[in-house]
Image (cartoon, rainbow, N blue to C red; front, side):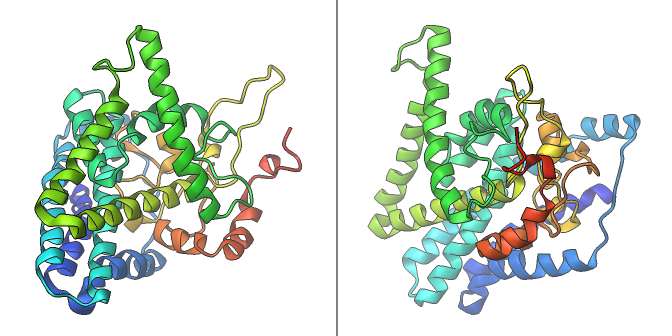
Length: 350
């Protein structure tokens, strides 16, 4: 029964439905739930430090319910997205209601599209990887599939990784550098993959071209049915969702560095190279993404068997509170800089 806690991951879609359906101040249901209710609950609820036995891990990995809960996000996300765009297009709403609904759609895409896509993108089955790419599409971030799997997991906590925020780098600076450089990296990775297969730029192996086509088709379809207003709505929802993702990237890796060894190579990735959060509500709603240290230790480890790493640097707050804190750089630096392991600080890093 305790595994049914992951049904709370659908609480964001539920709050998004309330935002779309009831309008008024309820248009901000997802915003209020994600950044007020969840942080308050995380202050009150205990942080269980569950360690699974080998037998428990085997049982959880065999239980297809965990996979099904991920797959169900595909129809849920696209249904709510379509419903939201139709309401915004057809009904006379105040500007504050439109802002609330679009904000809720952005949160939905970030949590139940991008986040689920990230989990499925690490799977071996083609079906699951296809679902991953499909969920990235409305977020306008399909290239993240390539860059994250072939770039970030190799280069994390080094200067070669645009998804690792530097010491004293503000969130706003990080948004610009990470978004631009991850896209560049995705193309570089794609070109290397094509070269290794001796394929041409215009071959069917060029996933980046297909990403452009699929995202263009998605936006074109919305424009055809909902006009220019619909296109703007889709762009706002997509951009807000990937900025939400980049804010999560920021808090997951801020200021942490792998040291260069005498051989000239970086030390191997361990649990100390990602910020960990064991706050239970964020864990459940984000399918254990907050146990990020264990995810990087073994990237193909499914969410239901990820574990808390005590030796990892720990975020003092859950993800939603940390994201709000990151919006105010001086406060973020004051809270977080002293928590960075001393050997990783710029002035002592070799």
